[in-house]
Structures are given as structure tokens and as C-alpha cells.
Length: 141
Image (cartoon, rainbow, N blue to C red; front, side, top):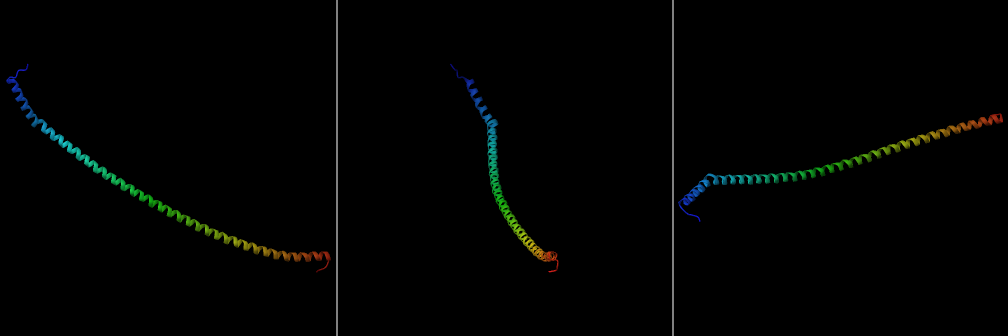
């Protein structure tokens, strides 16, 4: 069986003194270091969370700005495209008018040339008929 003698009490007192000494030398500083580490980690975590929230806000702002820029670009493109179509229509209309004028001028010139040719042909026909009559009849008509 176990004998309880004076050595047991000395060991018990030594153990208690060692526990108190270790508490002041080792455990309290360890707990303080662990507490500081935990505070540092929680501070870093909160800083990280703040930075992440700020980055998310910047990303949302960027996306909004990008969407606005895309809308402005599309509006500008549509405006320029419409202006191009209008300019194209105006050019085509001007060229059609110019072509119509040239066509009318050409028709007028052709009509004048045809009238002049008819006049010349009539004169020639009259002269030719007189020449034929003179040759056939042998006298001037």
C-alpha cells in the first residue's frame, strides 16, 4: 500500500512552488503572447474585411462606370451611324439630281441634234429630189 510520510508533503510543496513559479515565468507570458497574437489576427482579419469591402465597392463602381461608358459609346456609335446614313442619303439624292440634270441635258442635246439632222435631211432630200428630177426630166424643175 502507499505510505504517506514527510517526503510526500515535500514533494507536494515542491510541486505547488513549481506551479506558482511556472505560472509567473511561463504561463502568464504565454497567455499574453497568445492574446496579442489573437488580437493581431483579429485586427488583420478586420483590416482584410475592410479592404475586401472597399475593393468590392470599387469593383461595383468600376462596373457601373463601365456600363455607363458602354451606353455612351453605343449612343455615340448610333448617332454617328445615323449621321452617316443621313449623309449617304443626301449624297445619293444629290448625285441622282445631278444625274437627272445630265440626263435631261443629254436628251435636250440629242433632241436638238435630231431636229438639226431632220432639217439638214429635209434640205438634202429637197435638193436630192430636184437633182433626181433634173436628171430624169433633163431640165430644171
